Length: 319
Image 1 (cartoon, rainbow, N blue to C red):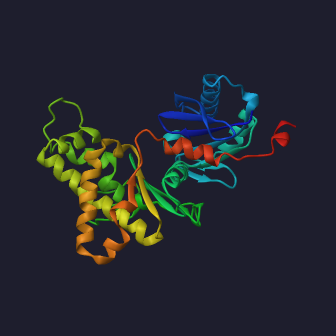
Image 2: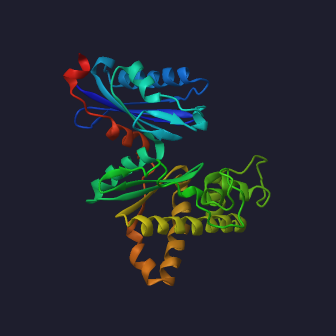
Image 3: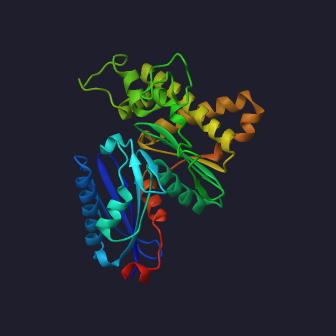
């Protein structure tokens, strides 16, 4: 049996999905990510792979390929990753080669948001035929992954889709990139929580989380409602920017902030509706059905990694 595995390596956890030759899920595993050193990162990743294989009742010698999504700047051509601060990999590190040596199979390495975009594209294509898609990830940061003409689009320098660092409000707070008023500094999860701290009564004595701000907004807390509406306004502009810049078939939205469910989606839909009311062009380019929220139980990152895993000649691998 020829098996492939997809891995989504994050700063706190690493998730794995094992599939057979027909892409049917066989086993899953999730472990904490050990970022104390590159060697321990690789060893921990291999441990997750072995756990998923054990859960499926399979062995390492049945594995033919792996796909891996990681944060940071990834060069898919040479398999290096750099500026992955959450993984403690700041200088270029040959992660693909290290994993290939450890697992003994070909490995495809890609940026995590682009990997999730590839997973989102496969999910959305099951709903209707698509040729292009933008995946907007809203979590600790904000970024987009692009699929154009059925292929991942990286840009000339691997930075395509980094809309989180486009200034939206020059009078806004300073972003970690150094600029002021970036989309990420205004509407990412930490930005939403930061706006609430000190502005909303904190009955529990703990810092307000992003999820809690959405809960309070849904319950009618006026300041939380104002914060969420403002974030939704910024995010609706980001959606429109992606549609106007790339003219994609769909914008799929995912990431940790979207797990707020209706509390996230309702104000975003309202902000998009307000934009359409102001402009026939906006109404034409951003109809409601062109923007979808990915289901909370669909892991776009790990699924995209599975589809990125190379499918080599099995006999060549075993030589």
